Length: 369
Length: 217
Ligand SMILES: [Zn+2]
Image (cartoon, rainbow over all chains, first blue to last red; front, side, top):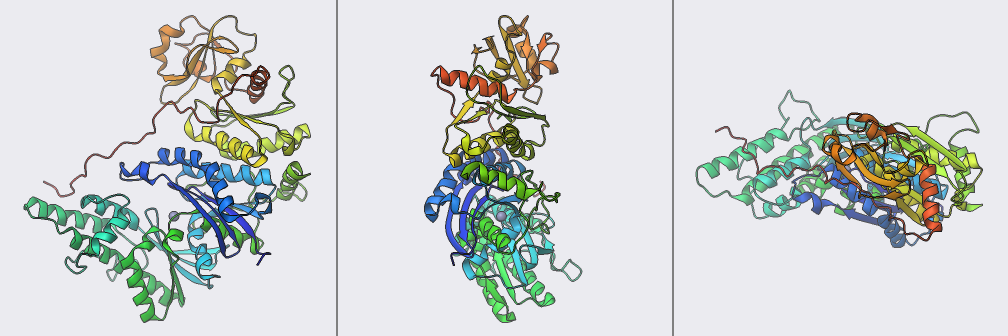
């Protein structure tokens, strides 16, 4: 529908410079420039390398998104940007760019939460999010179970990792096994040839007295490393495929078990899985089976929308506009530890005539009158 | 605009090298570049009663400077240039400080800014318009011989009086000076720099040592 909000979203919280454009729930462009190759030799994302890459990629990526979408910048209804959480220097490049862009166009600016954006992106794949929705977000940066009754205003954390993110565990195990970075795709591929029951690795925080919805992957990672080192010390070959499959089995088992449990306990009939680890084939398969058994509807966006991208930011921004949420003001700052409960960063309250609208009116006059 | 030093500085200039800035904003707060810059742009335009659409170019300090703040100015300038369809010119931040000394310093001098980690970004100048050396980053003590007897502008000089005993203002680059210098160079047909950062340092990134065993030996 042409009257749905047309929003451009900018994402720079980690190593992907993402610019997406959506109209309501329709994806129009998803332009990405990744610095992942620059980080590969370090075995992890180097913040300063990421920030430098964001600066170089920003303008070309915005231009590419506009071309891909075939829309004119002046037709945008708003500009959205990841305000946090994420790497502070990296976030600041995106926030500064979004402010300048919104200001120059005379459009409202929405600083939004990266985690809420990971959930909102599913609207581009499967339409309006059911309310409430349970979300399992798993990537190199996050492992969270979130319940959302309204993606623009009400996201509640039920559980999170107490040590490593799930994606970090994939990276570290891939390193132990001599596979590449990022570890997820390499482990997934190696595991296809392996036996997931070959080795019984521990399931973190699944004991009777453990927190129900929190995760721990540090012990698992160490356990895999010890197992591999013991084989090497004994002069034996390491069965890489079996180790990868057994490790992946443990991660998928814990994640899906806890997510389904959270849905049941809270009477939630829909589970969405997002974040880079959602691309893992074993996690998807196990989630499908367990959700079906439990009568839960599973929603997993296509892999390209699960990893960090600008379209997810645009998707949440469009929902903010559609629901009439307050825009951010020009003082918007990047917040590396923005709490997940803060779905966006509305502007401060001002006296009538001196606030946000006034500033936007001025900007609009600047360019178009 | 320039964000390569603790100053967030913005000025609006009419392009006549002989005229002063129409409006300017100069705030010193090393931790809030991201928050302060765009409101300053808005304030400067409003103060001069001019619209964004009247701009014909953007001049931005390209450093050298601590990276995080430096990028705020560069990406803001680049996006404004892209959106408004106007050119974006880079100028060395040290040149802005040198130009702002005006006629107050006779003969050669040095500009030094704080590079943190006990180092300075610096360059030597013949006069307010003429830089003699490429911008560099060094420990002040290692410069003592090269800068001996020379007056020095910039906050780096104030920080290390044992190396720069003759410190002169300004501490930070006033955007009005950058704008006037750019206007002067453009009027003379000179080329300005592309809006790309002068980092002068490689990113801090250590390649992790070979995978560390977790099993105690
Ligand atoms: Zn993410």
